[in-house]
Image (cartoon, rainbow, N blue to C red):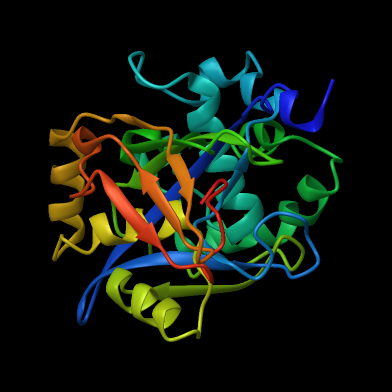
Length: 273
């Protein structure tokens, strides 16, 4: 079979969390810089997230997470919370003993310090952490925001569900030092401008979701807009142009304000975002 006749790579399930807060100059999003030595999106500014793992379907999650039945599959919600903990040091969980209030920042920091490294080393699962600390995931604060599938023809493909965290997060976060090397709060428009000026790198899906977020002035606005919108799957159709740039076609009903986007040659293709 020739190179061109090979079947497309099957997308891997993945989850991404867009954590928002209200800043002095408008809405801000928590983002991390991917490590330069990893093989996916190295050096890029991305939202916390990653592949859906087998542990995200652990039957015990029925006791520790109340997940909407309609969309998407429960494992995506769990993966989003887990990757946020592993990659950004943020704990999206409630304490049943405190009438369901979010875990206090001080306790969240202690839990991150205690479990983040052994979790990343595979010594225990995220479900183990939640069970030991008598917590429940705060999935009620997560809003389904977008669904992107990496274009056909890419060597690595992801089927990614994006979630908004529907509440300001007071936890400072602590990046894990392996997958991510820097965690920052940034206004969506500022992140876009930094990328245009060459100070940051954004993959395509990240950029377009930042553009959508930039329409909202507050976290409440962004959450209300997401709840009121229908999530339409985006599987970009890519046309490579002679100058090295790309023309990307996406469904107009996905709500990004355009059905065609011209991407300059220096902007890397979108994978997970």
